Image (cartoon, rainbow, N blue to C red; front, top):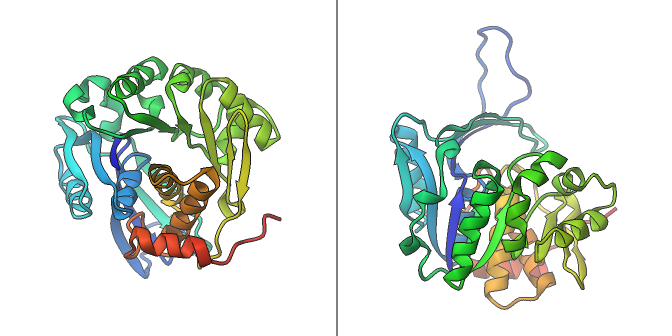
Length: 311
């Protein structure tokens, strides 16, 4: 699988062992502080490379040391970073995430160079030869520009997917609506689906997104697993049991696993199971690049791992 991951690339700074934020200038010892490549494009790129895909990152970063670090973290996973354009005067997008004991992760975030990424930063040569283009954060481009990029990928023979970063708000759906008819797989979370469509039923909301143009909507539901909806199918798969440490990269991991499953010829259920198994792997450690695993490891876990109840 030759996969291009375009859009949001972030350098996450993760802190584990947080019980509370200290008052005033008081210090606090924590267990671990580490950095990880992340983002709806960057995190998906990293995990997909772990799963054996040939991955090309396409996006914008700064000329700062944060950008140097992000490039190094992606490159050591085998991701081709030549398509990451460095923008003078803009810092590399970065987040600080204090991880609570239950895996929750409030965040401080700087948008940085992601705000100035445009379709002109992606050449036709960078799209050439791709089997699939994944666009993370289409809202930064706007619907018309995102549609143009996805159309260009289709013209090169690639399939496409989209993962929205913004929280679920009806106005956001209008902002990116032009991209949906050019999206083979839309990969939102449950809160986004309900918010985008102003519904209270997840299947109904996913069907509304299919009606708006998306070919397939694969929805993550946290501990409830995933829901996949097309014009003719509704598939629900449970999450896998794991010792949750950090959930910050789970959505990106699901995207990578689901898309890798489709590239391997798995049906929608099998692809969603591979996505959920990949997310469980990432949740069990700190950061999107948590642990060490291969496609074979994750497929074995998908086949034998314990499932969580949907209730």
